[in-house]
Length: 115
Length: 113
Image 1 (cartoon, rainbow over the protein chains, first blue to last red):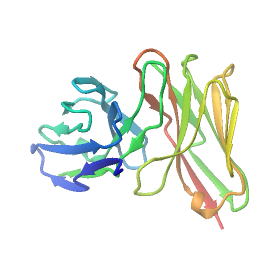
Image 2 (spheres, rainbow over the protein chains, first blue to last red; image 1 turned 30 degrees about the horizontal axis):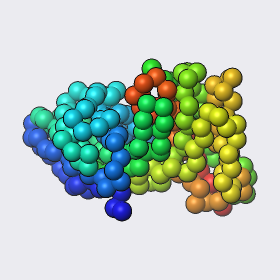
Image 3 (tube, rainbow over the protein chains, first blue to last red; image 1 turned 30 degrees about the vertical axis):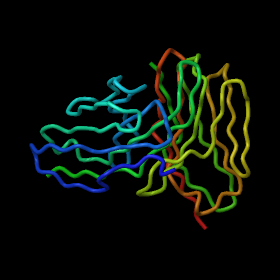
C-alpha cells in the first residue's frame, strides 16, 4: 500500500493565483482530513470528510474548498492565494466510526509558498 | 468542542535521561488518545496510542498513562537518545458523534549527547 499520497511536494504561487492540492489514499479509509502547519506551529484542521459526498469545515476553512467524490480522493482547492496561506499542508486519513477511532495516517505534505 | 493543552513547549534532556510530556483535555467523553512524533521536515507519525478503557500502555522505551478522572495523559520516554529529538504532539478524540482529533500545540524535545 502506498498509504496517503500528496502532490505536488512543493509549489510557489503568486498572489491571486489558484491551485489544487491533490490527496489520495489506498487504505479504504472513510475519514480524510486537510491540516495546515505554519513554521514552528501545530496542526490546524482546515476541512474534513467522513465519507464520499460529505465534507465539513474545520478550524481554519476560509480561503479553501474541498470535495470528496470518491473514497480515495480528497483534493483541496485554494482560490485567490494570499501570503497568509504560505504553509505546509498535510492530508491524512483514518478509519473511524460513530464509536470507534483509529490513528490518522499522514501524507508527506505539500510545501506552499505564496509571494 | 474538545480542547487539548500540552506542556512543556520545549524540553531539553541529556542522553539517557527520561522525558515526560503532559497533556490535559476538556471533553470527559473523549475515548482515544494518540501521540505523534514529527521530525524536522517530515510528516507526523504515530508512536503510541491509548484508549479510555486502559490506564497505561508501554512499547519498549515509550509509555503513555491516562487518568480519566483528572482528564490528563502523559508520554514517558526512558533512556532518551539523540534520535528521539523531534516535536511530539498529543491528541484527543471526543465521542460526541462524528467528531475529529484535536491536537495539542506540540513539545519540542531536544536530546543532547
